[in-house]
Length: 356
Image 1 (cartoon, helix red, strand yellow):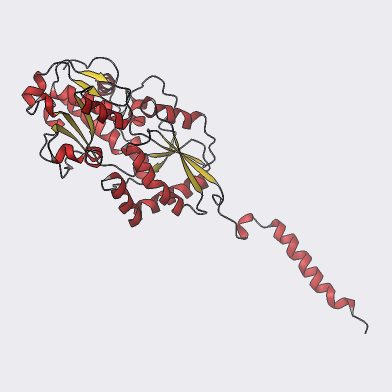
Image 2: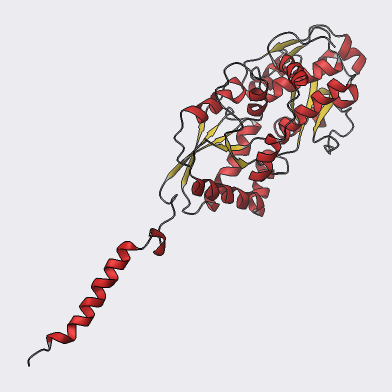
């Protein structure tokens, strides 16, 4: 039987036209695999492993992977040093802005920049913020029970208290300096260079006399110190002011020891620095579509009930997140009073505490 060739011409013409138009259509006209599918995302942690900051990162990472479309592999790289400035400098100047590397920042990074500390090679106003898992924190100061400093008068009269911390500029270091300044310690000595768990060990061994620390860290790592009265707890720094810690609400708040408007402003500035918590950061120049993917994933993480349960389990405290826009606004609105910044710089530095 003879085939009519003309019956195939319209079909061939239709298919040819379809392929031509398909080549002209934008990529999104056809389903694509998510950008992050099959990729590895690195989270640089600005703190050492084993501390509360590390546990916060470990609480976030599985849920970030869950909520990023494509469910990429996420690995943690530790880059402790300089109170967080080492990791922040690396993020700002060495990381490709491709959305595949995030910084889980330490809380001191914002303060170090505004204080104009040495070694700062990043600009906090150019970083891209993805949010923070915590905005409420309580720093406490405590001493070894053997010293017998259960009363404030005895604490103030004791000369040369050795106060331990991780590094100059670290949040716990600055908190220790705040307590010594506002409570009126007599010739305190500040000893830095420990990893987070090492400070506790040095305290138990008698190599140190005191330290400032997060209330959550004490309750998670050393609950006996509270329950059995093995340490003397003296004062608390509330962030935000007025938010009481259920186990340490009886301690005097550091604001009650301020002696001037300048000192009140100083505390207000530091509280704002700490309110932004431990923000997740992208480098400047990261493509906007990838920024929004990660911001939305972080929003979903912070709203995920499973995340809140896991955070409470690991950190021994409730998550109180700030969303991306809230972190960016808080940093943008930080007071930048030159006189107060100068005082904070002296308190947070390595030199002697300034006179009152």
